[in-house]
Image (cartoon, rainbow, N blue to C red; front, side):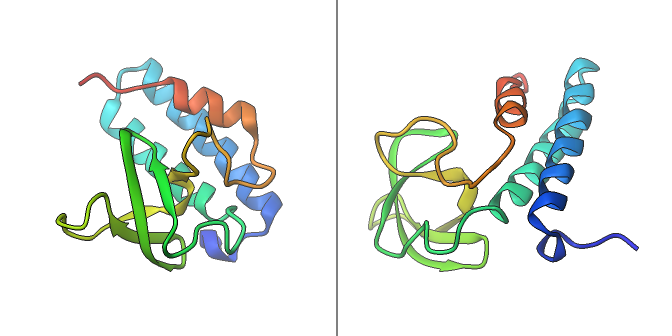
Length: 129
């Protein structure tokens, strides 16, 4: 019986992230971009389960991966999701908490003990536009 991500230990999450990274790399090499996108999102969900509680707070402003030049203001956090807006006039959006980073920082800053090599390798691959 497979465990759900929220049921996994820290070590099990790291192993799952490594597995997803390997599968995503194979998909990227074979040009299976739709599968690569799904695996990357599953990887981000697993990564979100490693973010320390309280790292992302309501009222905080964060950079969002793949949204350069914009800051996201968090209005509430529920589980691994952060809700908020880029500007007051926009509709509320939700992002996985692992995708949020304090302004002025580079890379993965909110994950504790994540396998940095796996994160760098996965983040290098981009699907064609």
